Amino acid sequence: MEEKKDEAAAPAPVRVPPRYAELVQQWGPPVGVEEARTRWGQLVAAAEGGAVVLVTLDTTEARGYPTWAALAPLDKVADPGRCPVWPLTSARPKLAEVIADATRFPAGAPQVLTRHRRPVAAVVAAVTLVDLPPDGERIDVDAFLREGGTITLEFDPGQDGATDPEGEVLQEPIPAGYIARAKQPDGSEVGQGEGDSVAEAMLRLWRPPAHLYSAEPPFPDGWSPQPDTDPWAPDSR
Image 1 (cartoon, one colour):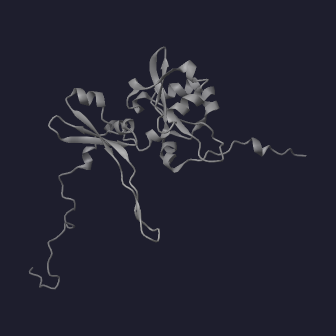
Image 2 (tube, one colour):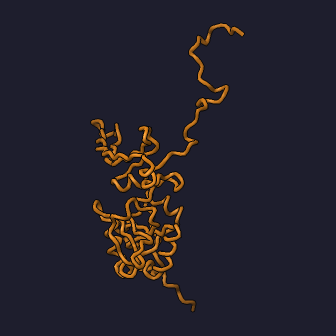
Image 3 (cartoon, one colour):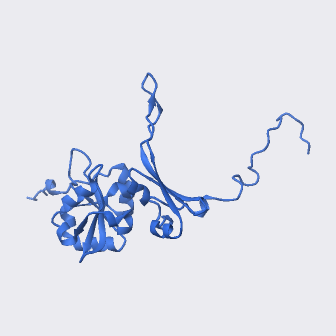
């Protein structure tokens, strides 16, 4: 008689919140805390090399999406010098606590990991990595300031949504957030970043690529808008 396989032992599939779909597509599915502990040295080395490793507190939770964090390179942290620090050997057995400290809303902060007191990687809330600009277009804040540029920070209180008496949405709400603007010494703006916190806005501070701006007319020849004319007037040609 053929033995039946224990289907209950199969791991539950990881549900991917829509906001993290981009990260999973780029870096692969998340690992659970226990797997991250087992592969700790390997995953930290990957983060040192520039990879992002997504980690969830509980990949089998049924009541809702689990907490998502990421083991990430230091360049994914806006201000690592001001972040809490964990030696790698201390962070491994307390990884759930490290993730909780990194993802706790609204007071969570990146947790920097060190080896022999040298920062090597960080645990961050995965949401802070969503919609990051390409690395080649991010503004190096330290270098930009040293070259004479300035960075200003603003708080946008957002705007409440509106509905009609029947409950139909007339205007979607605009969430509050922070805006960082980078300006050259002459006052011209060269880039900006937005986020739910100052750190996220700074992390998203980017210089739009040159191809977004062009001196060419917006319509190719033959499609340029023409002045208003009487469509019934005789053709003068």
